[in-house]
Image (cartoon, rainbow, N blue to C red):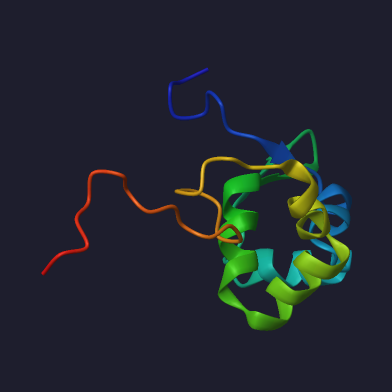
Length: 101
């Protein structure tokens, strides 16, 4: 195993569809259009989770389905405290910054 493939999370077509709240047909369409990266292992598609996330952010319709029916519906329950990486939490003001102009 090379360093490039270490730590890569891969899921099946059906898992990807369930995670992102879309049909398997939609996932396969994204693969055919080269918008979703995948490899074939023993005759089965294994999809890069990172490419799924990127793909799901490119279309408003897909983003809405992801947030309503897929993994996005549980984001509020994750209690993410680091506002730097959480798009749904308000950014905290830096204590060292000055409001004076």
